[in-house]
Image 1: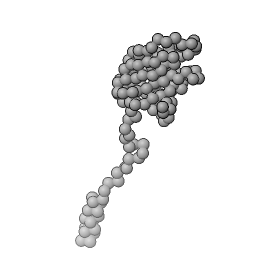
Image 2: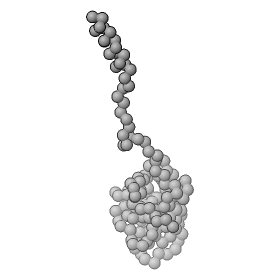
Image 3: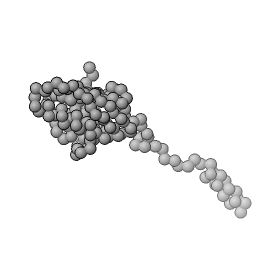
Length: 148
Protein backbone atom coordinates (compact mmCIF):
# COMPACT_ATOMS: atom_id res chain seq x y z
CA UNK A 1 0.00 0.00 0.00
CA UNK A 2 2.90 2.36 0.83
CA UNK A 3 4.39 1.71 -2.59
CA UNK A 4 1.11 2.62 -4.34
CA UNK A 5 0.75 5.85 -2.32
CA UNK A 6 4.41 6.75 -2.99
CA UNK A 7 3.96 6.02 -6.68
CA UNK A 8 0.77 8.17 -6.79
CA UNK A 9 2.57 11.08 -5.08
CA UNK A 10 5.52 10.76 -7.47
CA UNK A 11 3.14 10.70 -10.43
CA UNK A 12 1.38 13.89 -9.20
CA UNK A 13 4.76 15.67 -8.89
CA UNK A 14 5.82 14.56 -12.36
CA UNK A 15 2.57 15.72 -13.94
CA UNK A 16 2.64 19.05 -12.06
CA UNK A 17 6.24 19.64 -13.08
CA UNK A 18 5.67 19.03 -16.81
CA UNK A 19 5.23 22.12 -18.90
CA UNK A 20 1.77 22.45 -20.35
CA UNK A 21 1.37 21.72 -24.01
CA UNK A 22 1.22 25.27 -25.30
CA UNK A 23 0.54 25.92 -28.93
CA UNK A 24 3.45 27.56 -30.63
CA UNK A 25 2.45 30.42 -32.89
CA UNK A 26 2.17 29.42 -36.50
CA UNK A 27 3.29 31.66 -39.32
CA UNK A 28 -0.29 32.84 -39.76
CA UNK A 29 -0.58 33.99 -36.12
CA UNK A 30 2.74 35.78 -35.80
CA UNK A 31 1.98 39.49 -35.90
CA UNK A 32 3.68 41.42 -38.67
CA UNK A 33 4.40 45.11 -38.96
CA UNK A 34 1.74 46.93 -40.97
CA UNK A 35 2.68 47.84 -44.52
CA UNK A 36 3.66 51.51 -44.69
CA UNK A 37 2.76 53.56 -47.74
CA UNK A 38 5.13 56.40 -46.81
CA UNK A 39 7.93 56.66 -49.34
CA UNK A 40 6.24 54.43 -51.94
CA UNK A 41 5.39 55.22 -55.56
CA UNK A 42 2.81 53.44 -57.72
CA UNK A 43 1.49 53.31 -61.28
CA UNK A 44 -2.24 52.94 -61.87
CA UNK A 45 -2.93 49.62 -63.61
CA UNK A 46 -6.71 49.37 -63.32
CA UNK A 47 -9.27 52.07 -62.55
CA UNK A 48 -11.96 50.23 -60.59
CA UNK A 49 -12.46 47.60 -63.29
CA UNK A 50 -11.41 49.71 -66.29
CA UNK A 51 -7.94 49.11 -67.75
CA UNK A 52 -5.73 52.19 -67.88
CA UNK A 53 -5.01 53.79 -71.24
CA UNK A 54 -1.56 52.68 -72.39
CA UNK A 55 1.29 55.11 -71.69
CA UNK A 56 -0.95 57.50 -69.72
CA UNK A 57 1.37 57.23 -66.70
CA UNK A 58 -1.27 57.84 -64.04
CA UNK A 59 0.61 57.54 -60.76
CA UNK A 60 0.32 57.87 -57.00
CA UNK A 61 3.05 58.56 -54.46
CA UNK A 62 3.18 58.92 -50.70
CA UNK A 63 6.27 61.16 -50.39
CA UNK A 64 5.88 61.75 -46.65
CA UNK A 65 3.41 61.11 -43.86
CA UNK A 66 0.13 62.92 -44.53
CA UNK A 67 0.83 63.72 -48.20
CA UNK A 68 -0.05 62.23 -51.59
CA UNK A 69 1.09 63.34 -55.01
CA UNK A 70 1.13 61.98 -58.51
CA UNK A 71 0.16 62.32 -62.12
CA UNK A 72 -3.53 62.15 -63.02
CA UNK A 73 -2.69 61.26 -66.64
CA UNK A 74 -2.01 64.78 -67.97
CA UNK A 75 -1.69 66.89 -64.82
CA UNK A 76 0.26 66.63 -61.58
CA UNK A 77 -1.73 66.56 -58.34
CA UNK A 78 -1.07 66.83 -54.63
CA UNK A 79 -3.12 66.59 -51.48
CA UNK A 80 -3.39 65.34 -47.96
CA UNK A 81 -3.98 61.79 -46.76
CA UNK A 82 -4.87 60.36 -43.38
CA UNK A 83 -3.92 56.72 -42.84
CA UNK A 84 -4.89 54.65 -39.82
CA UNK A 85 -4.37 50.91 -40.05
CA UNK A 86 -5.80 49.95 -43.42
CA UNK A 87 -8.16 52.90 -43.65
CA UNK A 88 -7.23 55.96 -45.62
CA UNK A 89 -8.87 59.25 -46.46
CA UNK A 90 -7.47 61.34 -49.27
CA UNK A 91 -8.39 65.01 -48.95
CA UNK A 92 -9.34 67.32 -51.78
CA UNK A 93 -6.69 67.14 -54.48
CA UNK A 94 -5.12 70.18 -56.12
CA UNK A 95 -3.86 69.73 -59.67
CA UNK A 96 -2.29 71.66 -62.50
CA UNK A 97 -4.61 72.68 -65.35
CA UNK A 98 -2.82 71.62 -68.51
CA UNK A 99 -5.08 70.52 -71.33
CA UNK A 100 -4.96 66.85 -72.30
CA UNK A 101 -4.54 66.35 -76.03
CA UNK A 102 -6.62 63.16 -75.93
CA UNK A 103 -10.25 63.28 -74.72
CA UNK A 104 -10.01 59.67 -73.47
CA UNK A 105 -6.97 60.48 -71.34
CA UNK A 106 -8.72 63.57 -70.00
CA UNK A 107 -11.77 61.50 -69.03
CA UNK A 108 -9.51 58.91 -67.37
CA UNK A 109 -7.82 61.64 -65.34
CA UNK A 110 -11.15 63.03 -64.12
CA UNK A 111 -12.36 59.54 -63.16
CA UNK A 112 -9.05 58.71 -61.44
CA UNK A 113 -8.97 61.84 -59.28
CA UNK A 114 -12.64 61.38 -58.35
CA UNK A 115 -12.01 57.75 -57.33
CA UNK A 116 -8.93 58.68 -55.29
CA UNK A 117 -10.91 61.27 -53.34
CA UNK A 118 -13.52 58.55 -52.60
CA UNK A 119 -10.86 56.13 -51.31
CA UNK A 120 -11.61 54.69 -47.87
CA UNK A 121 -9.19 51.79 -47.34
CA UNK A 122 -6.19 50.12 -48.88
CA UNK A 123 -4.73 46.65 -49.05
CA UNK A 124 -1.28 45.55 -50.13
CA UNK A 125 -1.27 42.24 -52.01
CA UNK A 126 2.29 41.84 -53.18
CA UNK A 127 3.02 43.19 -55.75
CA UNK A 128 -0.18 45.27 -55.97
CA UNK A 129 -1.63 48.12 -53.97
CA UNK A 130 -5.44 48.11 -53.95
CA UNK A 131 -7.41 51.20 -52.97
CA UNK A 132 -11.10 50.66 -52.29
CA UNK A 133 -13.37 53.65 -52.85
CA UNK A 134 -16.90 54.46 -51.77
CA UNK A 135 -19.31 54.03 -54.68
CA UNK A 136 -17.04 51.70 -56.68
CA UNK A 137 -17.53 47.94 -56.97
CA UNK A 138 -13.87 47.20 -57.66
CA UNK A 139 -10.68 48.68 -56.22
CA UNK A 140 -8.13 50.84 -57.99
CA UNK A 141 -5.10 48.64 -58.68
CA UNK A 142 -1.54 49.90 -58.67
CA UNK A 143 1.83 48.34 -59.40
CA UNK A 144 5.18 49.53 -58.04
CA UNK A 145 6.62 52.40 -59.96
CA UNK A 146 9.98 51.48 -61.52
CA UNK A 147 12.99 53.03 -59.79
CA UNK A 148 14.08 56.29 -61.32
